[in-house]
Image (cartoon, rainbow, N blue to C red; front, side, top):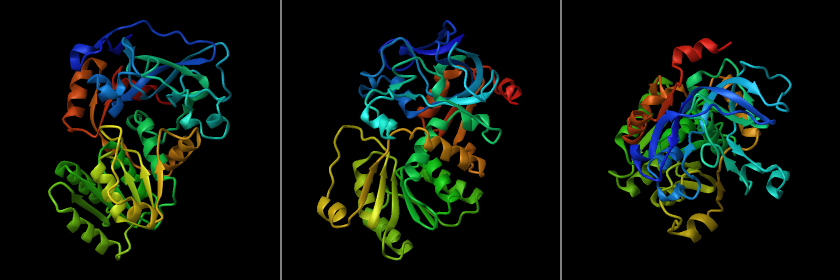
Length: 369
């Protein structure tokens, strides 16, 4: 089979090959899945460029990629599950947890300290076939287009970040309109948020947000460039939008210290910050901890991965009810051979999400049933 392999600890095309690899054989408790579509994630970009943040997690050679959907090809001898059959349309939770630690035993498996991530610690889904534990396979319905099935991992992050509170009637600020920020905006609008405020440092990102809002006839989007505009003026504008009380909830997607502090500035007393973005380093400085955290009585919620499996259930329910995120897929390729070009487009911010169809999109569509 063709697969995308992190072949050497080197940045760029020199360290990643699209090459022939053996088709994996499923173990007794594993399911082999024919990959229909796979998407680029920010983590894959770090692997591709061999960034320091990822080097301890990936040992080349490694097939990478962890956002995908596909069709069941083969079951291991103990992997049969009720309601699952060969040919079924599925995805999988690619965080594999131990099931034994305190976190796993208390409903918090998404923060299991022994987590293995397929596509980092084990071979992943940038391939024609991938094997995963049967317990992690999720059956999908016809309401999940292939292009959306390819990015459910990332959508799950957005669902986890947004669904820690009821968004109906709330004012929501999103700091960073990248792929997950864009999906979070769609979830907020779909969930009945009264106002969505987007901040970014890219005019292109903000224009994408405006086009999305116009396509939904959503009049209560407000977009601000916090690089070219004075922060105090933006805060003043947001105060006016929220009647002087601040926003109910901040979804922090950038990891920028400036964005985190800005979020603390604009959130209302007793408000909520949902923190998903990762900073460039390991430290963030809070400018006025006393005023903006303690005296405001805010709640800070760190977000990692997806809750197993309540986030998946909520995500599929949102998609079944009409949540539209297919628009974030802005580049597709009918072969893994074009992986380097797809990554280049992702690098250049020409597409929020890039999706590959290892056997072609038409062939994958023909397998849907």
